[in-house]
Image (cartoon, rainbow, N blue to C red):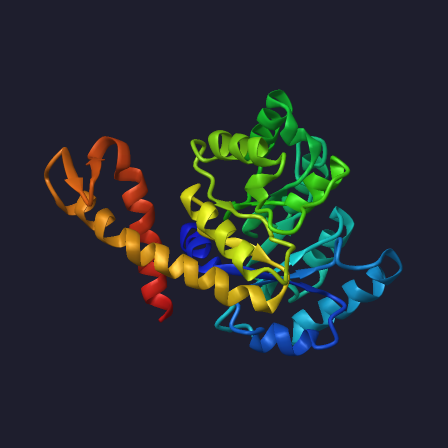
Length: 295
């Protein structure tokens, strides 16, 4: 499956700690209909539980069915943990890729030293360090991404880590776009989208505020994010409903752009122009095709 199709299939990516008591069941059967699941050995696991968590995850990966309806990824805590996965015969066979935490130009070489032994392994690097706060160091991240041999499915955004570096947290009722990270999100979009990278929207940690989550997902879609991290099963339906509705709503305009011969035309009060909106239409067409494939 191409990385573009994998991105379209991610939907609401649910994080599950590798310490979860039902790890084997979730690996094999999924969780609350999540289209993609990320099994975490990083921030979601206490330092004194890492060795045990990694060992049980590798054991579970070796024994889990290879074919499932949901995509499966692992977020290793460090290059050392990634090496354990790569060198454990059969462990990678059950995975659709790796989420690389805290990826920037300083950490890239350590990750690449392990990844070079598995160049076919798809990646989702996570952007969540202070390197994003300055143009020069953000540019350096782009250069490090270009040096990877592995296919990159999408870039994930670690909003909570970024807020943590500022010594603040999101307050109730606030979307991520209401925080000081808005300018950083703008930098991520304008730097990495022109370079051809898809981007997954960050988690909303306000688990008990579905209205805030809904407002945030609407903004995610407006910024061109068609996948999003979630940390609780209750968030899955809200995210998926907005993604599905957005694709259905945008499909008609996208199809017109792809089939009409007019260079410029009006639709529902908006000017559509082939040269300006053609790449958007192609993205929507690809996302729509993947949604239909899954149903």
